Image (cartoon, rainbow, N blue to C red; front, side):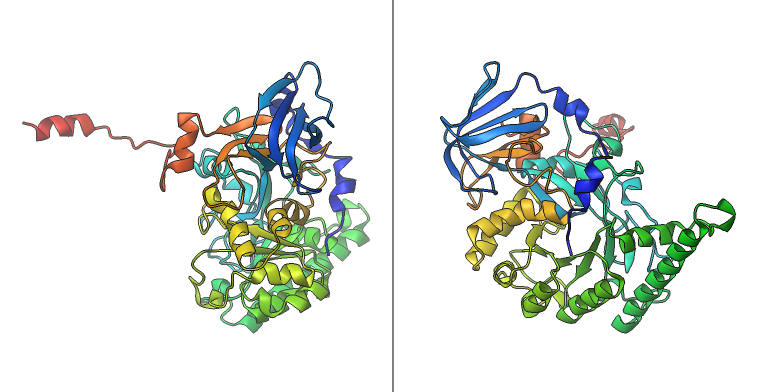
Amino acid sequence: MMHGFLCGLLAGCCSLMATGAMAQDPPRAFVGAKIIPIEGDEIANGVLVVAKGKIVAVGAEGTVEVPADAEKIDVAGRTIMPGLVCTHSHIGGSGGLGGADGSGPIQPGVRIYDSINVHDPGFKRAVAGGLTTLNIMPGSGHLISGQTVYVKLRLAPTPKKIDDFFFMLDADGAPIGGLKMANGTNSMRDAPFPGTRGKSAFLVREQYIKAREYQDKIARAAGDPAKMPPRDLNLEALVEALKGKRIVHHHTHRHDDIMTVMRLAREFNLRVVLHHVSDGWKVADEIAAGKFPCSVIVIDSPGGKLEARYSRFETGGILEKAGVLTAFHTDDWITDSRLFRRSAALAVRAGMSRPGALKALTLAGAQMLDLQDRIGSLKAGKDADFSVLDGDPLSVYCKTLQTWVDGVKVFDRNDPADRLYAVGGYGAGQDQSPYLCCFENAETESGK
């Protein structure tokens, strides 16, 4: 169900990356590291050349021409891999309170980027874990909880507004992103929310039928303002999903819920990425037959909710063997972004291939966001998003030393300010300090 939608879009789009990337001068050549390009074999003694925010060349030492004016950075004994892509994140305060509210179960017109705090320390924790691109989502307590946004973690200089994070704009000048949907127990509660799985599917089907009718009215109006239907932001978002412009990122756990999502996707020709898929191993062949990509969450203590009780470490490997495009996600805080690579390690331990698991952290996620032409692998012409590690990425002992976005260093473990976000506990480096107007007076009085 995935196709090269972005390829046509890129020609007419405006990227917001120029300021940070153009600051990179002169070119830089990272030499001596083991390079994991994802597309292609691992390179034992590699060279990575980046300039103006892009990868210029990557290959074995002696096969890559290093520009005469390049700054050479010795990374011997280190490992370089592409920036990690999280297809499902709630960083920035976007989880339970960031999207739709309790007034109804279907609110596709809500835009998550209206709720994101760009100074949330979660962003710095993410780059400390080697993440460079996120799909920031509203929560899953609604059948349709709003529009997601794809962001680049451009943290140097410190962002002042969410626009600094937008991956890019579409042809209409809007930030690109998907549509968050959910089924199962999260959205089953007291009215006006559905109380059963059958009612949940009915409400979704009803809204997409209305969106089709809205789309038809617009087409019949043929640009005549007098014939246009009243503007409806909810239906506009659903029409974008019907057209394939907006990918549906669908929270679903149980095998019967997964089958329902696929049924609705076929009925309305939606481009759907299945998220979580705790029971995905039970219906892997059906998922593969429908060509539905899966973004899997891998946690070290399976369970946490009744419908996820059959979650298995083997899911990634089972889906991979079935031929399903498989990625991992953090659902941060469910998995701390600093520990994202551990998801791949656990999957390999349970039977997934090493190349497949590393792709699931990078290129597979990029494909699910239609961004594979820009990110997800180390290849000439792609964005210079990568991390420098001190060991093998699947080792529990491996640390992220540096993270680069658009050729700009956004994390350095040797910098004490950055190190705080790599090693500090919950709440480390909060962006705000409490206002204790009477603290000094209280302390003085207590000493009397």
